[in-house]
Length: 451
Image (cartoon, rainbow, N blue to C red; front, side, top):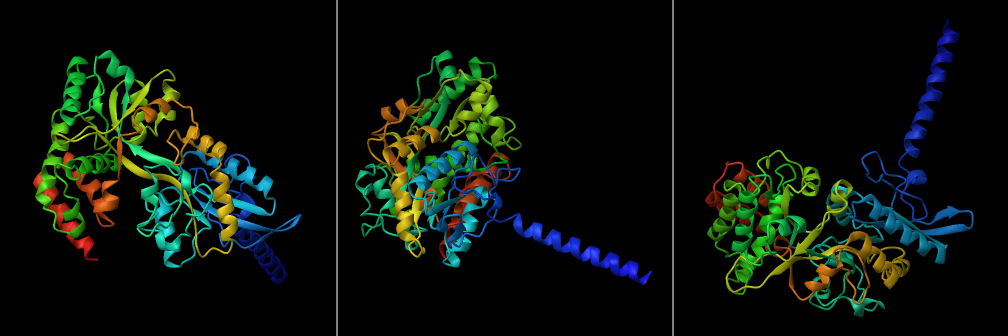
């Protein structure tokens, strides 16, 4: 009996050791997002990239040691992740001594990067997602002498260049957020794309009335409350940074009168009360929107048409249009909100900085920038990059429209985006009034500024 128990214990130890070994391997490079992997290998069932060791140490290969570059990106669509890895695979064919490993952390991107900044242990190359100068500037190498630097577009160059002329990142795609719309619906009801906010509300009323309620003018989600916060953020620029009002100085120095927020909040509440926003706004999800849009039940969506591919899965013949934001203030002209969408910056303290710059230079090639533009359906950050997709003509039509940085990124302290989204949702839920919303913005603005 004693020998039997010893045998059992020994077997358990062997099995335990084997399981530990499997557990350790599961997070390693066996399933990582290496550039020459095919498809989306390494992503879990939810499309999330595995955690890997991104220390950028050389890795062994049949040909000897390779330099490993880690690249972090905010790109979420699997097909676009694969597109980025395919470009990196072409790079490794020309540079067989360099291995490129992509990570796409999704919703955890910002939190992961904040931890890495605190430890001064960042990826070799990473996406600055709108914060190249303000948040990441001191961690990034200066790229102003790179051969592509002089070709940055006139609208994006100031966004990624600091006051001393340091260039923080290559902008792969520019963000130009305005209003996406169902062009078929507007044509059916004889509505020209509005240019003024009052015209937009008139169009909403016509759609709701003449469709007998079958068409909801605007879609928002209280579950994915960034749609509500996004409306407020987009229109705050027109409301407060217009030359007619121009509260930019007071927003920056902390003296802004937050009672001025009340009219903007009231406009959102009015849209809901008049039935211009989907009735299930508090329970609807962002993922509910593409199907309704494809079925002609939604006319307008605030922001870029990043949902287009999901719409085409339901209705491949639908025509989606984009336009600048309508003006909120009389005498003003239309605007886009935006700046950096997808970028590549190089960690200045990385062990392989020259190789990182070489990789970024490869992505800046016109043929690669065209590939990125056609895949993301966004305007490229470099001049004279040919692209051909369904939104190309719109971007060309509106190429001279002013592009302002996202309101919260310039004028609100870190943490206010969440306040704006949650309190905006409370507003449409009837839990706060527009005046109480303004009070909440002031309270949190003061608190976060003083942290």
